[in-house]
Length: 409
Image 1: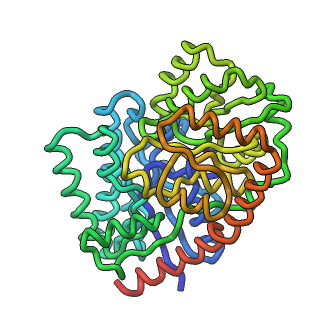
Image 2 (image 1 turned 30 degrees about the vertical axis):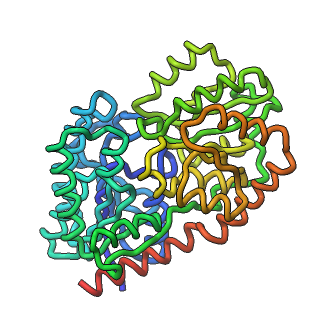
Image 3 (image 1 turned 90 degrees about the vertical axis):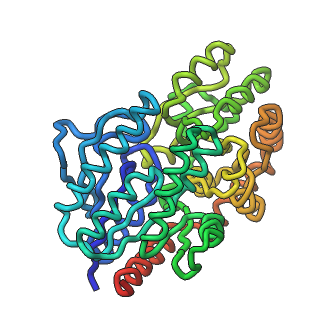
């Protein structure tokens, strides 16, 4: 049975753009099975804030590896202020409905959150077409925003939670990418059979653990240094300040270097902080497309994953950790919770308490001083992620889920 799925996803990216590629990787595999997969996305990069089309129109249509991509005009305000960010989300919410209405008649409309506004567009489009609405929960919004202090107004918190509850209640089915999210939803009195779990993961074929990343080492004058890389967003939640402060402690160890490969609202402030501290052992590279990040990780001896020390972040499965594992590199993990369980079960890295730059620096030094053990953790990481978090397996689970949602509507 051939199905047409329409996904509303403001921050959708393919392999030639920086950011998470979960939906691209799942979508292209659906297309390879003969299914039709249409994505309505923003024409502004979520990570860099730059426009992605040369001559912006209300809707710009392209095709990427068989995926029909409709880029809807969006106000360019991601990195200007919190207010302009909300305006940007709202502008996409409106234009996404218009773009989705031109996509033909779908069998399933899928929304994904955060940001939560685009999920409203998906619900409205599903009702317009009289088809099932599948809601994917990638982060627990607004709980994360409240915990990190991004959302403070009692009125806005009340409104956000009302929208969250409305979407959970009106979705025909819910999809989550972390087992802890499923537990959260069930505690919200959502029937267990209404919630499916397809983990975050990685396209393992994109990474060669044997590659040493010589071109990246040459570009950034890394020579034979022990390189530790953070690859991801530079936002309020990511706690990159702790990594910059750890670089202070690492300064006497001239054989250790940190790469920060990413972009986001906090980048300029963080670069200014590193300059004020006189750090020469830390390089902000800017973002890399997903099909190039493998070379950055190949040049690395280990990866770093960290988030602010708030309770809700213990529920996350960060994409970057699975990338590090697929590259055959161990993780220095400053995130507690379910992802810590993965790393410790696999023997694929070390955990340090979130928000502690001294302990983060000590963990990096310990890895640098024990290369045999560090390399062994990298081998463990690759073997474990291939067995348990491979995108090929997830793609089949996704195809089966879409079929089930369409048939049971």
